[in-house]
Length: 312
Image 1 (cartoon, helix red, strand yellow):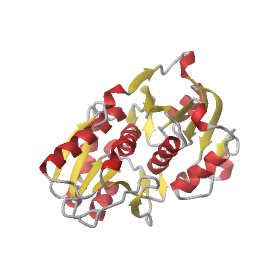
Image 2 (cartoon, rainbow, N blue to C red):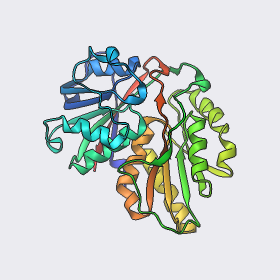
Image 3 (tube, rainbow, N blue to C red):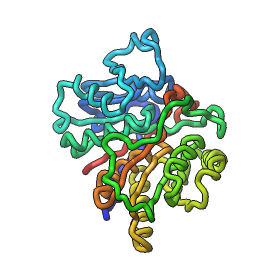
Image 4 (cartoon, rainbow, N blue to C red):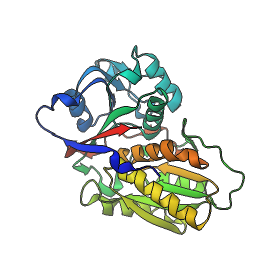
């Protein structure tokens, strides 16, 4: 079992300058229309700062042509896109200080980027996550849309699965998007379902909003267990995943373990960390219900900025 309490998180000031220790050689952020993304990008001091423009946000070239240091690869596969971006960098990733702002990332891209850094020998990087004041449409907020996407394994997180499916488990990080929860649940219909909710949530009313949305997917889930991890803490999330799997395996060996992080980007980081450090011990993969379109802005305001220091 990995001791996730050794990982360090801190809170950065929303106003004013940050200390010199919060300077990096490379800063990577995903461009969208959220002010909490653009404000942090402007605040960060780094030798090189990159904007990633994901095709699912559907920006026309005229909308981002004024940006500096942007990458707008046409790939729709998360691996091809991130590999294409990294290929443009004339940097030895294992020898520089790297920071990623998770806030605007679409989850599969975030997952593959973190896996790629670890595979390229990056032993330590920082990740930022900015909490909003509120979701614009509360529990009715739409985060993704469109037909045609499929449920599949995320590149870099494919598992060598067993043909024995008698005790398969699906652990879902349940966020607001009930359609994604339902799709991934139906995809692994025969697996036993477990949900992890963000509690404490980012704001006091967000847990109730989250529950209201998740309840819409109850039919697809069937009987399921619920666990909780802070919505803003990837390390506790990874620890909860570790505790769940150890407890389940004391009862009966898990035949295949499927993880689907659909909640906050901080929790997504926790899922990827758990998979990287403990997933090799069992047939484990991360699966995701892909959608062709994602909302450019769903929030208002900026309440807190977190920094997570990841060391492997």
